[in-house]
Length: 355
Image (tube, rainbow, N blue to C red; front, side, top):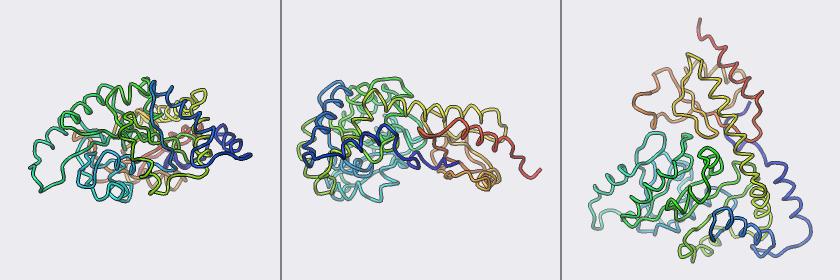
């Protein structure tokens, strides 16, 4: 039972079939192919407006290059202090921003608020002592499985734009957030003030497919050069575009994300009656964060359950982890089964500690 990440499973059958079909014959290189042309039109329909799209292979590339598009080398990009872009990209955003600064801000469950942003900006000294703040990056969903409502996103972007900041959304689990909110892609992005999106497919059934989506074409003018210098201008781009074509076709993305979210909800419901387990944050997408004893974690490990211990820093002050407790991260995927969930719940329910 592997709950380490939604990256541990491969691609969906539909997406694998699309790759195989695109692999046959010959096609234009570097995006001059029919698959890319069709996907660009699909994404226009998906977002209910014309967008500018660049395919890349990894979320790190998408986030780092998107950050570079909104923040110059002498600037600073605000984000949550435990966001993926600041904690898990090995300095790639700073590298591709040419040395710009990532500034981490606090917030329960990985979420920022307009008040947090305003307070930080109000304390900036100005002048040349620190780099000027040029952008904001938020994650949808966060590293703690929470999502911003469309209204919350709009409030954040309004606060940012009042100070001239551009806004990036890390959408590694964009599909899961859409399913959780029940809103449209447009409502969760450009209608709420997002300028550029890292649209993730890899965590939701693609083999390796990410896209940087610009809602302001002016921001995209130099991006083709940034992507080329990063080694992300792919000669056989049709094999990435074919994945997105299948991903979007018939709302395949929604079916995959709905399943993984449902498995997380089933796990949450199974854990709710257990007196020795509580959640660190509410379950909203396909991640569940139980706070358990070190003994229960060892019990799960001995039984072959694979998961990760997670940060406690963004827990609410009224729900701290105890000295003998650990926060676990359990991630479900489109391939997680009800049997997987029920076996895990049974293992956790059957734990009796030292008694």
